[in-house]
Length: 225
Image (tube, rainbow, N blue to C red; front, side, top):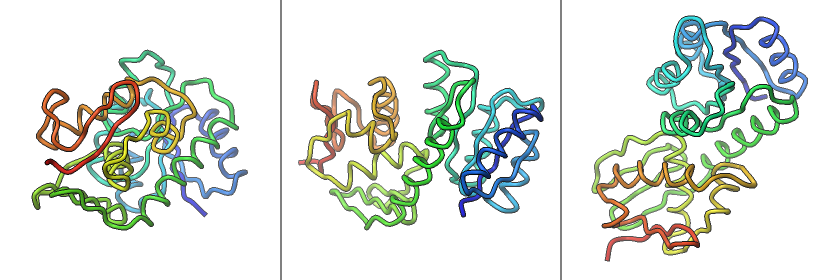
């Protein structure tokens, strides 16, 4: 059974989350602080982390960056902050998904299952080579011209999905459904990750090499001509 680490300082909320996830066949551990969570991940990495932002010792966004420095674990943010700028900041920092409090138990479980399913599916994919770009989903590595790319989990998921479909224009709606596991969303979410990917691939939207945006349709990954 998947192991989920719940990081939440409110004991009542923490108990409710642990109960709900356990009821849905997850092995659940919990931590009341960011530092306790970091120790837990370092000693025995779980399959997924549900991370509250309002922690007493560290800001959740800072804790997310530190988690990413230890292990490439899927992270779902639980936050009361719903403004677009904060959501973009969290996704850019490496969050796989986010839930705005208050959220229902069904919504929590749906997001947990979606993120775990995406991680498992990615691990079974073959290696993809597009020009000098090589993406290995099983090892979660990507190289360009033989040099390793430092990607966040979501950046990697997006790149791997496109690399498995070279020269095909992938609609934005499909990216939201398959990479973000969302039936709908804002184009800004995709644009932020494409912008960071382009920067790491040494290109820009005005001078693309691998990532080509087809206005009003979607995104295509192709080897440079």
